[in-house]
Amino acid sequence: MSYKVIVTGVTGMVGEGVLMECLESPHISDVLTVSRKPTGRTHPKLKELIVPDFLTMTEDERLRGYDACFYCAGVSSVGMKEPEYTKMTFDTTIHFATVLAKLNPQMTFVYVSGASTDSTEKGKMMWARVKGKTENTLARMPFRNVHNFRPGFMQATPGQKHLPSFYKYLGWSFPFFKIVMPNGTSTLQQVARAMINTLVVGSDKPVLEVKDINALGNAG
Image 1 (cartoon, rainbow, N blue to C red):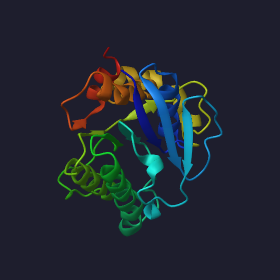
Image 2 (cartoon, rainbow, N blue to C red):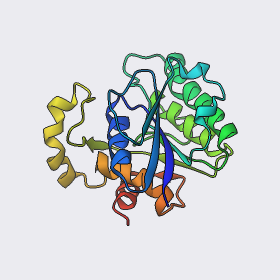
Image 3 (tube, rainbow, N blue to C red):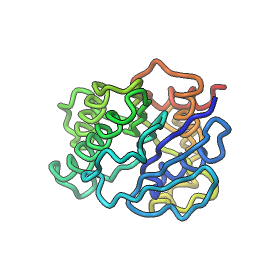
Image 4 (cartoon, helix red, strand yellow):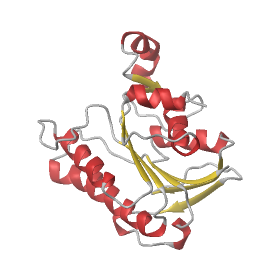
């Protein structure tokens, strides 16, 4: 069986890595990217929907008929106040998910959160509280399945173009971190394959920590 998926955040490191894996996967027949800018890629499986502001999205028929959404869009909290970060992280994600839930109620929604996300929504770290609120709200939405991924340090996929500046200085250290923190590191291929395997293999976990992501990514 093959699946049709939506991928967001494709001009960022995680989304680009997930997109690359989806385009190569025999389990994925169609990929629709939803982003603010073109991907710059062409592929028989690939369609693009350019949306300048996710908060203005409506029930566009081009979003209907998909089996999953791999939501990889996000921003760093560095330098942001909580209201601004909440708008970019919580409000944007939930609005997007609400639109998709109306068009595709049988969809699996995979949200890229982050290690140390705060499910209580009461901790000291602002970003972790906001991510926790986002996870909790998504879990209550009327999808077939919701899986919140909490990756840690990720190794980019060879050939990626959209890498944050810090990765140029830290990317080389992945083998070291993999040894000293095996439950804190993943390759982006593992993360992407784990997303695909939520459809192919299935998972009963609403929240997947790094070790869960890696196990699911290596399954099948």
